[in-house]
Image 1 (cartoon, one colour):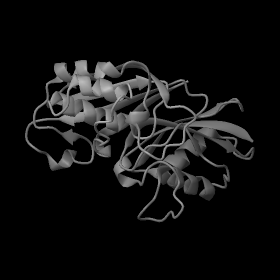
Image 2: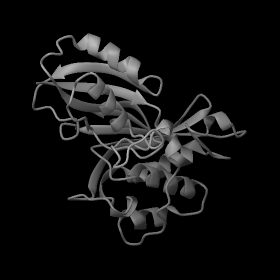
Image 3: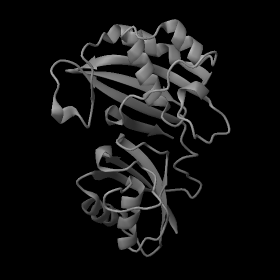
Image 4: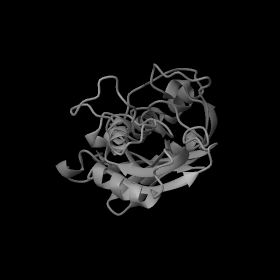
Length: 245
């Protein structure tokens, strides 16, 4: 068996999240389940191990996973071509590469980069699955708000209930917001993230920008003094952009 690192992008609006579901079918298919079925058709019985889960509706520009390849598959370029054809149009294989057996898509990852896409102006139904419409955006104000998350914190109050973690402490190396063409991009760059953490931070930050909450209340929740809100921004605007090893 040879270990293969697979880098791929996907349209999350077509899937019920990344993780394989207990009752997979054509209506409620997962990204991992869809790829696994394609591998089985190519006589590859290995399990697919991802760098992390993404929620239903969340997209990925460069998700990473690994699987073990039987020795009878010698031509990895041919495998990539066949697999890509089977997974299009909603999943695209960007790269297949042989790696050392010690490589683990999740545990070898050192940093993760997420983007959240916003747009203002007239509502556009064609953006509904890929960005969040906000009537008014003060990008400079939003950037300053989001930077309060930078650093090492216990994000217990910024995660979805039901998470099973040894620790809720995570480090965010950089975060902020900037304008790109007609969009505003919110970004978070950290070692790892808790379940729905990015969506909860985005939602709270937008509410501070809109003066529904204050910086003081954000700090109180970040420091676990008081929980003010646990609502999530829609999954459609979130993109897993890159995994660093």
